[in-house]
Image 1 (cartoon, rainbow, N blue to C red):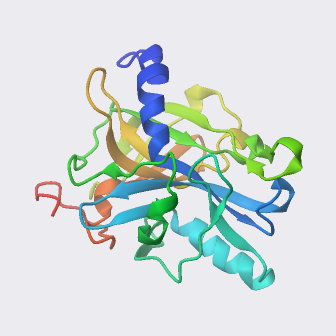
Image 2 (image 1 turned 45 degrees about the vertical axis):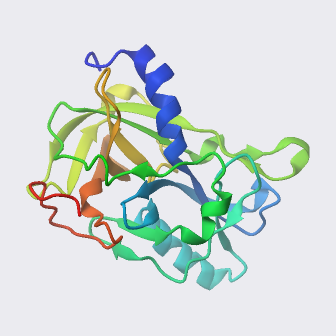
Image 3 (image 1 turned 90 degrees about the vertical axis):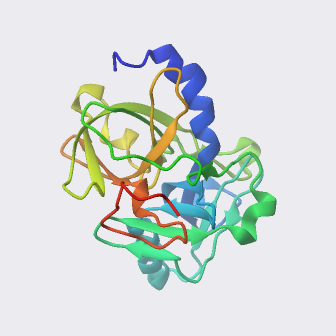
Length: 245
């Protein structure tokens, strides 16, 4: 983390990144945290052709399976300081189980996006990630979830992480980071599935490079943002040499 000073991450990068992400969760009631079944994180992206909500495939798939047992279950998102919004798409625009990503059309929700913004992926297409790059992400771990004041509604606390990229697969569709040096508990990263990950260089604009998919054996795995096509479909073999059109 010597490449990027901690104070720069906290005072410059964190306020920018938090505009593009939020909690996504399953609940029986939007009125209280006690009804929440599970939660993850989403990112908001503007591809130039679509405005998308992006999260993990396993988040969407988990909701489908949970709803079979509890039909009253709702999937909700929080887009600002107001109440949770029921997010009920029929199906994703794009989904892929192997690289664990799913994209959804946000057109019906543009008027209620509140404090959130869509990262302009079409203006700053992500490059291939390199070993040693510094990445930054904000998730909404479940252990920070609490009942709102006076017991009405649910509040999600956020957790930020600065990580160093250790490796990527041959296609560039996924990359990993060793988080053993962060000395964090598993509970602190439960609920960050789907959170957007940004390349950080001091005095340079942040650049979206991926989405967190899983944590295992002190490794965080990410799916590269270039796997999302401008129309919202998924490409497991991203071509970094081509324009993002």
